[in-house]
Image 1 (cartoon, rainbow, N blue to C red):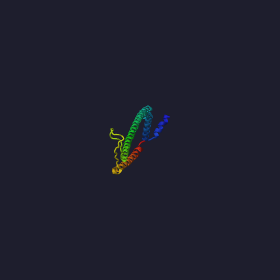
Image 2 (cartoon, rainbow, N blue to C red; image 1 turned 180 degrees about the vertical axis):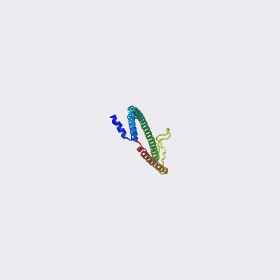
Image 3 (spheres, rainbow, N blue to C red; image 1 turned 90 degrees about the horizontal axis):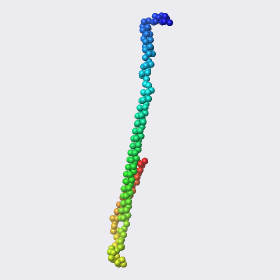
Image 4 (cartoon, rainbow, N blue to C red; image 1 turned 30 degrees about the horizontal axis):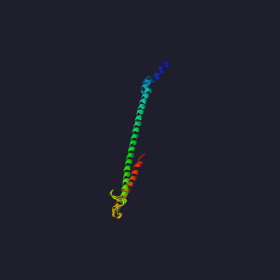
Length: 173
């Protein structure tokens, strides 16, 4: 076999012999060094498993932090809602109190004054005649104006109450 190799090499020109020699040397080099280059440039599974474990730990930490923040957010929203409800109840209590005061004031102004026929002196004889004095309703025209003013205020307060209810109630969960 080697004796025919010399004849084959003589059939090539000198430039072709150099080219064939270069191809042969580069092929031997690639075959020899190829596996080690591939092994060095390829990451092994242990390194990837470490990286994956590290990322999993970070994800768990971030998840627990998110859960903590969500809990704080829900607690803050609940506190805000409770404060809003409390303020609404205070406002409604004030309005109800003003309505009660206005209704009481309107009733006291609208009622005619009662005449007291009791004796002013305890020493007086109960059978003795007592002088009584009555107040004419015509003599007090200001009462009608006061009653109308109370009624107007009462209407405004009731309107305010309904507006407050409409404004605050839809915002609550």
